[in-house]
Length: 195
Image (cartoon, rainbow, N blue to C red; front, side):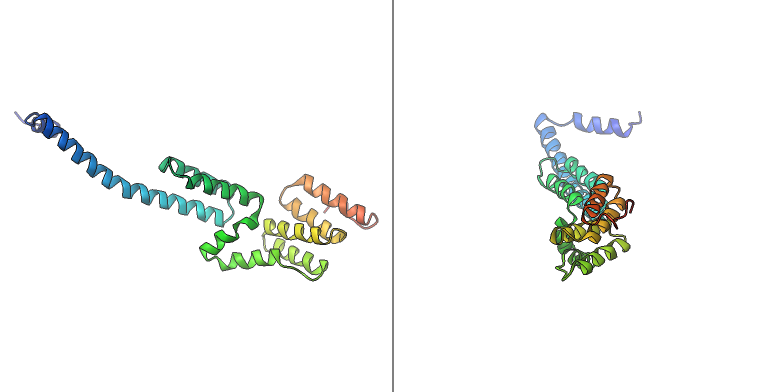
């Protein structure tokens, strides 16, 4: 009678005592755990890197999705929740990512952040810097820049007009209308009605 591989295993185990079976089971389990732990760690590291790369590109939804996968890989770890929260905060406040970019060594992005938060000498220079950020396809940074400008120089009409343009690009229609209204209040004769 020819034995299949499964029957061979069964025949092998039938010749063992209960204590030998338990020892064998523990050894097999230990080996599986030793093999699985490095695989789990590599998977965690790879998924975290994907989330970090998405966050660096400011793809906030994708970053949050990748970080949520970490919850499944390491359910007892607090890190996935902290990473998800970092992405949520960054979605509302791009400037909160400064430390993240420092840790990544992303000097180009740090230079853009510096331009966004610089103390400009006049509202003209500040508004022009914000417009340059928008021209460089950096609308989130341009918005942070113009918000600082309109806070520093709230009576500067061109700052509010620029803010309306930036918020329009970002699809924030309520903010666009508010900025245009503020510009019109400052100078009713020259504020555009549509950016």
